[in-house]
Length: 243
Ligand SMILES: O=P(O)(O)OC[C@H](O)CO
Ligand SMILES: [Mg+2]
Image 1 (tube, helix red, strand yellow):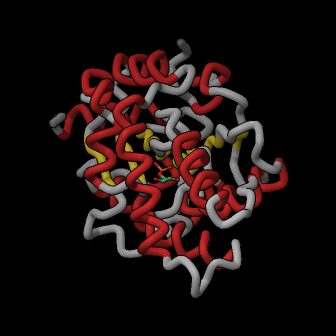
Image 2 (cartoon, helix red, strand yellow):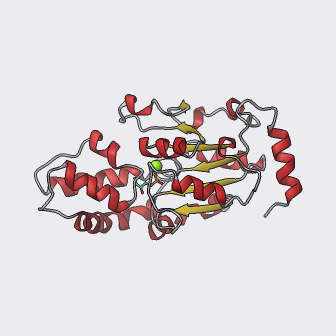
């Protein structure tokens, strides 16, 4: 944990920067880790059992949400209400995901960005709708890199009463930096999902979106910046030291 003098120095350094960014919060699925594809294949498989096809308009509504919220959207939007419960959907999905998550890989540009921000002493956190047990499985291979995070807030944290697009998870993550001078507009959020972008905006934070290429572009309008890849991120756009 840093001392008050270091926190003050960072605020003084940031005061001349246009966006005044001092802290970063990362989403995880589809942003740090290439795990959204696992959710996609599991949902395609479940839906095919009912003779239906999964598409990106439904994916866009589910991604970034807590499991039960996503499950409720799935059964409603696919017309499976009364045939498949959200709870049964989650059970079937978990059976598939459990074997896939330990194979999770980093998204392009993640390692460079995390190591750079760490070297610049920018405090970082993760705010993921994923619950703790899945977080542990997904991050098995990435412990060293993720040890640079100041903290992690998962979807089943009691502080997260309402899932994304509510701001709860980002506000909880901001609070856990334990910096009494930190203001939401000093925080840069990285997200891949429309609901996550809305949550960051509702928390009054800046947000860079790195959407999947299949996502409808009209769902990306609410982000401050949209990138095809984290490899395109320029720290200086946000007053942070360049790579
Ligand atoms: O994108 P995350 O990390 O908030 O997690 C989202 C869900 O687990 C899957 O969409
Ligand atoms: Mg995500």
